[in-house]
Image (cartoon, helix red, strand yellow):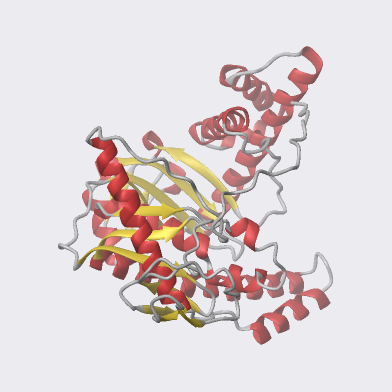
Length: 407
């Protein structure tokens, strides 16, 4: 199991100077090689590979002597990152690689495993120039780092917008184990009023961590400062610290919710929500972004892999709120304002969110049974995804636009 452990570094003044030079050189080499690859294709119709960019870096070292001061293996990783970005563009269509800006306050570079010397207590030795650096992390992570040094795969050195330095160590660790869960399966419904509602009746509140008045004041102070001045930089750091505080508190809460769900349940079922599409609704965009559904899903998925738990996603078009969890009646007249409703067939009074969570659990059980039957070689009934109105999903009438990309 590959796991990243992020530690806070406290380098000396000389080490800080070297780190800043290393980050700048890594960015410079990346941008130069990206420009080289683009020009070679435009002018010579040639697709370059990593050996070509390696030869180009040798030419750059002769032209810019200060490049030789940086560690060669870190620069080599910049070229590898560039090649990965190109492959992602062609194979996974993730977007063409972009030039890195020196004005971006978040900078990073990667170290291969043979450029990391090791960990000793609360001190880490990366390379000779970055030797014996004091670091801080949780006691549990510190023990794991010292115990599994031979399992280190790589490390990423980064500097955030506050000027703090971090080192993310990639470790290959054995799978973690949890006690036997209380429940075999649970359905969860994500909401805005309440963050998570489970089919068992547990409600996790939506803790609103944003202090809008304080953020507004800090933004106003930043806008009043002259661009390029030292006072503007101080105001920017204060604003960044406030956002970082909000993010840390939110992440701490999300991890607690995920940990409790995974401890108590073997299988967790949730809707595969289209969050990027939902934030286009300007009335709900801020609330959806603040509640961090995407981040919750990300943490849930990777922690489920750690602990050997299962996560099942059902279709976003499944009418979880409109369907009666007792008799299956579909209430097509239900609106977003209706928080409670009574089923006209069986007379059951439903809380909207809890009813949705129960329906999600039932749908998750159906999907799991289909998977079991499929693995046994049994014939399966045809399954049709449905929209929230109970009808098959409509095909988009928009035609695909052909986009020509010049590389």
